[in-house]
Image 1 (cartoon, rainbow, N blue to C red):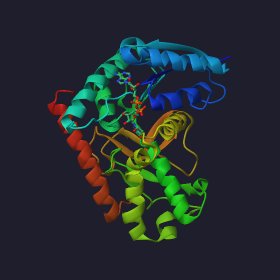
Image 2 (image 1 turned 45 degrees about the horizontal axis):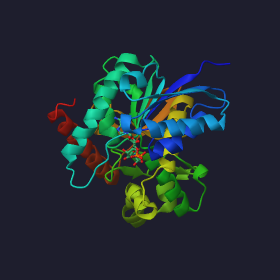
Image 3 (image 1 turned 90 degrees about the horizontal axis):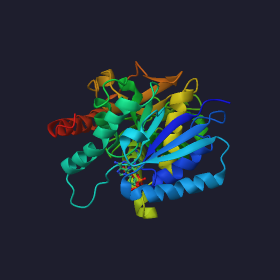
Image 4 (image 1 turned 60 degrees about the vertical axis):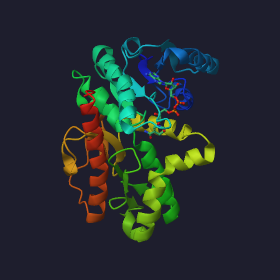
Length: 328
Ligand code: NAX
C-alpha cells in the first residue's frame, strides 16, 4: 500500500475543522487510494476539544486513516506536512479595527509560515481558509522564502461554488452544465463573480441569462454577501460548505481541472490582468499534474474591469497595511 500523506489542519477543533476532518479521513481530499495521516494543530486551550474529535475519528475506523497526532505549536504541527489546511484564524470581534484584525492574524500566520519553511515536506501545498484568507496567505508565504510561492493559495472555491448554484438556478440548468465561471480578487464582499466567460451547455452564460440587472443587483451581491446571509439564517458561519470547498480546492489542485473547464483559486499574481505581482488574488486557474496556471488571454470588458480593479485595490490596501505593521 502507498505511503500515507501527511495532512496538517489548523483550527482542528473549530466548526470547519469538525466538518473537514471526517471527509479527509474518508478519502475525499486525496482520493480512495491514498492513506492519510492527520496532524491537528490547535491553540493549547483547544487541544482537549481536538482530542475529542480525534476520538471520534478513531471511532469511524476509516480504512485510509493511518494516524492522528495533535499539536499545540506550529513547528511540530507542520513537520513533514505534504498538505496544510490553515483554517484557524482570529475572527473579527466587535469594535475591532481592520488593523487590529490584520495584526492579530499576523501573529498566527507569520509563525506558521516560518514553521512551514523550516519543516514541511518538499512537496508542501498550502491552502489558507482562515480570514482574511488572501492576506493571511500572503503573510505566511512571505515567511516561507524557501518554499515556492505558488504553493501558497487562498480559498475562493466556496464563492465559486456559491456562484455556480446561483447561476444554475437562474438559468434552470444543472451545476454540471456550467463551466468556466470565475471569482476574481479578494475573498470578501468586494469579490467579483464573473459569468462573461462562463459556458452553459456550451453557450456563453451572459448571453443565455441576458439580464444585466439580475447580474449587477442580484447575482453579484448574493454571492458576495452569502457568508453574512448564512450567519443570519443559521446563527453561525458557513462550516460544512466551507469544508466542502476546501476539499474541492485541494482535490482539484492535486488531480487537475476537467478538460474545457477551470476553477477559481487565490494564487500569487504574476501581474496577469493588471493584478500587481505578488498579491494573492483569485483568478481563473487550470490545474494539471499538481500545479496551477492562471488562464491567459481572456477579454475583460468594462463591467468586469471596474469590479476586478476594486477588489484588487482592497487587496493592495491590505498588503500595505500588513507591510506597515511589519508583518511582511
Ligand atoms: P471557529 O472559531 O469555529 O474555529 C477556529 C479554530 O481555530 C478554533 O478552534 C481556534 O482555537 C483555532 N485557532 C485559533 N488560532 C489558532 C492558531 N494560532 N493555531 C491553530 N488553531 C488556531 O471558526 P470556523 O468557523 O471553523 O472558521 C475558521 C476560519 O475560516 C475563520 O477565519 C473564518 O472566517 C474562515 N472562513 C473562511 C471562508 C472562506 O471561504 N475562505 C468561509 C468560511 C469561514 O468563514
